[in-house]
Image (cartoon, rainbow, N blue to C red):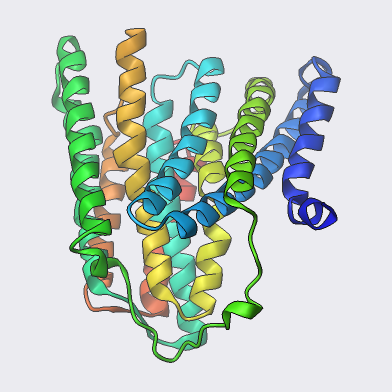
Length: 361
């Protein structure tokens, strides 16, 4: 039991934060801007702690279940966290562009932030880092296709036809994900793996035993429930903070994207420093693809259910940033090796995204 408590200290920290937040009640939002801002920051940190454990237990289940179910668990758990946080924040923030801005921010963070920083740090340490270039091409074309259908074409769809196009988007995204999952876990699974002959695996006896399957399922469900409860309080504190402090309009979307991407950041950096760039490519581009191809149909279905459409069409500058990002990705990930220069190009685009967000663009 003590070993389990030590292992789950991040989840316990999130539970403690939840207890304090609900005990404080209205005092978190009724004592001025400073209290609300500090509460928002602490609650976001607590949500990130819980999401780290959700990702850990999803990975444990994935290893036990194997493909295709393991891949589905990993993907769906990550999307579930994002949808839970996004849905709760939307219930307190009526902005029609929140879904669009969150998906856009997630793609910028995953591809330019995570992949760029990982390739930069890994390149400075190891020089050129190898991976399977088939994976880069497949991920890039899938992301481009999904974003074009769901976030570029809607700019040209008449307002009165939005529900027809939303229904079409749901169907086509499900079809894309089904074919991709079949390819990833079936006849083309080798696209997403790379052999590292110089890496020796630890003996099984030395490997740390993970929690049981039932325990992992229980803790994963508990983690998602805790994230939902924390997000409810965080959304209220965030709204009060935004009402008193001048911040970029895209901040709520960036907060949601950061929460959903937080488990992948450290994992990708560790993989890059260990000279395992294939893991970085799978994490960064896989997270981007799952955000677009699964979050979009879920939120579109919600829009059809409520009758309130979201503004999914990206702004011209968002469209330009996405297209440049994916063109750079296609060029950089076309030869089976990354280096610090390629990492720096992505990180420069991420810095540009941050600056544009600060400027409110």
